[in-house]
Structure formats: structure tokens, C-alpha cells
View 1 (tube, one colour):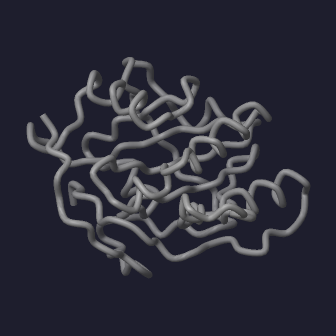
View 2: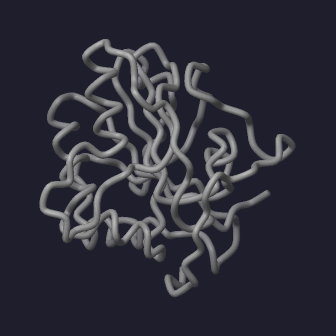
View 3: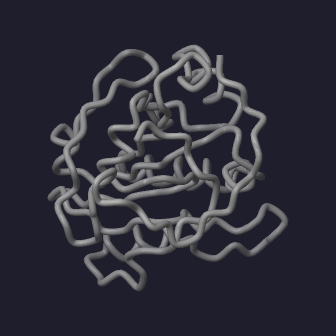
Length: 201
């Protein structure tokens, strides 16, 4: 069983080895993936072609993730855009081993505890293959993919602290609003700002 008590580590501007992860940047085709969710259903990039897609990396033991979910900041965005037809996949990446892998029942419990949309599948990336494909080494982290399968935005979700009454647009919200309106994105990438993931290298 996963133990969720671990130190908070701030990651800014991650330097990633090309031998370990792919070099995916906004404007590139999104890498293909095949990952099962907590209910056992498989998900592939191809099944989401034709739709807007957000990939969100989630680590329940990370303070930065907890802050993003405080006062329902990120869950509200997730629910709002899913109601507008955006597909939203929550990903938990880990390396193999009983002390690392999140079991399906644990993932479903986390879904309720953190207020994730009931319609947002939790993908269990148990060998880090999806994280490596998308050059992700930290959480929280989001990637926006357009209906043609092009990577539009990557980086921090940018939700404001819970105590902030007027949050304004988060990075992912601003990216979605501009992209869905057919307008250029003001920011296509932002530095990772969260906890380093314990991945299979």
C-alpha cells in the first residue's frame, strides 16, 4: 500500500534527460499512450481525437497538489470544463513495487477524498511510461491537447491559493479559453512547480 507521507520538494524548470523522457513541446503532436484506469478500462490518445483533452498529473501526498485542491479550486475547473465537453484524465504515475504502485481501490478512495469529478477517470501509470512520454516529472502538472492531437499547453495548472477570493484565470483555464476560442495562447508552457514524482527511469 502506498504511504502518502513524504517530504515536499519544489521543482522549478526541470532539466530532463532525453534518454529518459521524450522532448515534447507545445505545437508538437501529442505522444500516443495506452494506460488503464482504476476501473480497468483502457484509455488511448486516439480515442480522444476530435475532442479537447486535459491530462492532469496527481500526487495525493504532495503539498502542492493539496494546495491546488484546497477549497475545490482545481476540482471546480475540472467539473466546469467537463460540462463544456472537455475530456479530463487524472494520472497517477509511479514506478513498480508494492511501496509505490497505487492500487485501484486506493485510487477510487482518493477520488472521493479529493473531490475529483465522478466522470474523470484516474489513470494508473504504474511503470511511468506515460509520464516519460510527456516529459512529466512533477505534480501537479497539466497538459492540454487539441482535437487534432496537438499539444497546446504544458506546465503548472496555476490555480491560486484557497484563501484568495479573486483567483482570476489559472494557467490551464486561460489556455483552454484561448484555445477553444481559436485564439493564440498567451502562455504555452510554464515551469513545473510542485513535488518530484518517484518514477521508473
